[in-house]
Image (cartoon, helix red, strand yellow):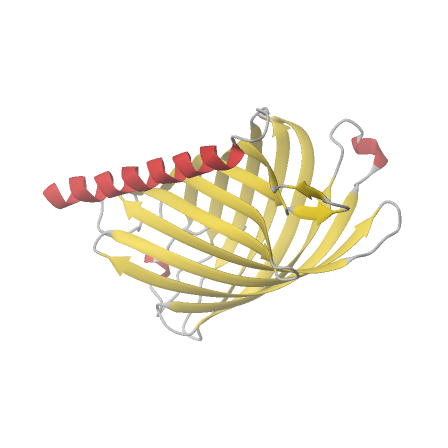
Length: 264
């Protein structure tokens, strides 16, 4: 029991650090209304052959439970090289709208392909996940332009099971992560995403999560015609609601105790 209290204390400390970091990042921007992210995921954990996959749909609203403006459709294949290393190849289609004029169609669409490595590490009850991702992104804008961009992402995710030593059926858990987005052409620090939430694994199939996510976008500093423009940032707080369904247990990988990570 004493160890459990220590773990919970560490989790709360991580949350407070993440929260204060986020406020520091958004203090230069005017306050904006809260938004909402909905994420639905179907996972196929790696079985005896170590191959798995996923499919996900995500929508976002500019306000709480309203003003839809963004959606994602994506999926991919994964390979469990070991209990600690997983490789993924995935892709998706993304669309951004003006929530005030949805009938006009998307402002832009994006086709994306990415390669990913996930490393799992355990420290007593705390489960850490490091995710490295390289993305290739093809855009189509209303004006007909079709730019291409690359992006590098790194996410450190911590999970703390509250009522069991591992996250299995009937387990409540805390989840905290920070993710950075880098444009290799520059390089430019493009975005930071911070999340803190609570989840519950109902059984070997269903997992629900709810929490707070702050996403802050950065514009690089510039010096043109003798005028220096400092780096600017625009951030927004959101409520995140997530539902995951796992199709069957993996035979060799112990999928019932796999970390309930979000694919986003």
